[in-house]
Length: 287
Image (cartoon, rainbow, N blue to C red; front, side):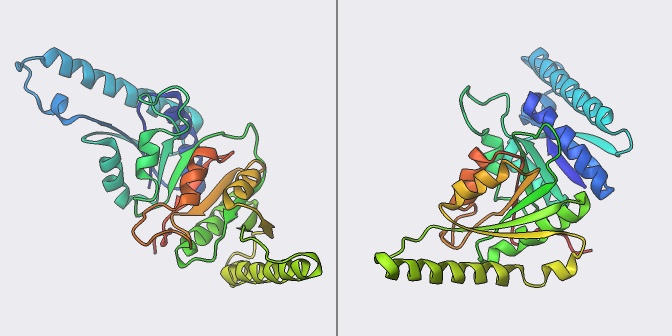
């Protein structure tokens, strides 16, 4: 099941359209969820300000109706259910996503300030769920035929690798695995060149080792390996400009153990040039 959170914004409706297409690829159902404060749902009809609560409930119901209609316009073959739940949107979506294969959110919500790069709900759920989170931003006008995967060689990156291969296979597109390194090269002249070549060789081996065995599991996926010297955020941002989807792990090699979301993933939530998937260490459910 795919779960998509909506709040009445245009970004949320775009997320619904993307989630429907994803559900069709996976031959699964779609649950559309709106989360609102608990008090309008729990108050009695004769309570003070009952008319305010009724207005809020009616608005939420209308919002879900619009989202369901958007889903059916996109593809009427997908099974769609709508849910109105009480609580904090971030906490409720994280909890509800425990039963989902993928959580989808828009990059901006109705509560976002003009000029903000990312909404608080999108930022609040990415890296905190047991399933991958898709943040829908900068939808390509037409299919580009490629999924881009960020690889850093960390143990936490396995989930992103597995998800990216599976997604490329579902879509019938190629997969570009990108590894970027930005350590400075010591020395100058021929010694610096030799050091750079040696370092680049080591980074290519790191990428090859991280990807070992996956092409055998997904022989239908055409794999391109790319190693570049530069900051990972910039390298992956540039690669995402030519992709339908960018997939990264929730944490990387350089992040502190207590962090739920790594610095590269966090930055790409703001700057990716296509929809972004943040995958936890175990991204795919075992069936």
